Length: 383
Image (cartoon, rainbow, N blue to C red):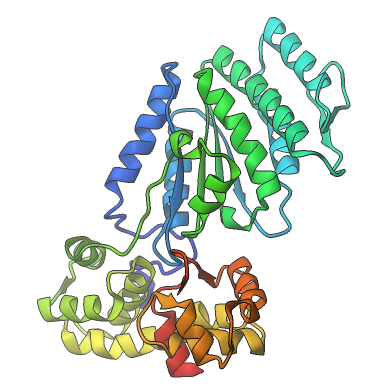
């Protein structure tokens, strides 16, 4: 069929033509915004999941919902070099200018900003903030985040609007940055001000947040998104095709689900290549098998290889040993034996680096797993 009309979208964070299986998360985020807009407190959200399950797609959907409600939003994809105080300070400056607070609120906001220790108020008549980046105590930064978010919240309430921080890849943030922001968000929530946050990241993120502050489990809702259920996986393929007058044979749907296990990014890849090889308006089992070979090659050369290449030879040896143990999760004690070591401390440095790089995580004490679905199969195929 005509590749120019191919409806499938296997991109990083690209919205699929049929966003299915995420109704509950979307409904809960809408409820969050509505309650805060009505002056009620509500939990912020931490969304976790493996690579390729659509976390960034969901975050972009949340941003669109905030725009529809005329909320001010801050969107940031975090990296291991990201300074959260600098990001928040710079954007709070922008937010305050866009909210155009009344003279009374503006005077109070400037008074709060002038008292900050981590940030410098450069323009006493405006909201020009500068983060110095100097070493700070966690307590001081927590106090300043609190005052900054309270000031933004009061200005937003006065304007009849709201503010939402949308952070992607939060697992890359140091706890010394994330914990003070959580403290400030907690205080804003206590005051029922219209400021909230959605943090998106790998499954290790709730642990980071829990270590940041013990009350985090009450401040956040923690939805975990995973592979799609069978009906939703079929819909992700069939609905976009149906819009073009194209159908999938049941055997074709069966094959794609068996090969993708319902992971959204994999489904988009298989749909794309099955469409391109199909010759008629009915996509057959043969089409999905032939297209699936190309899809798997594309995944191996892109989605999987990019992550494997981030590892050093020694780290890849660690990953190969994990994959060689069979299906996940993997016991650290088994891994010690597989790598010919005598104790866990001999693996701790490599393990910690791989966790920091976002290639593996610890789902429980003494266990490890890949952050990428079916990465074990890839390591066995290619390495």
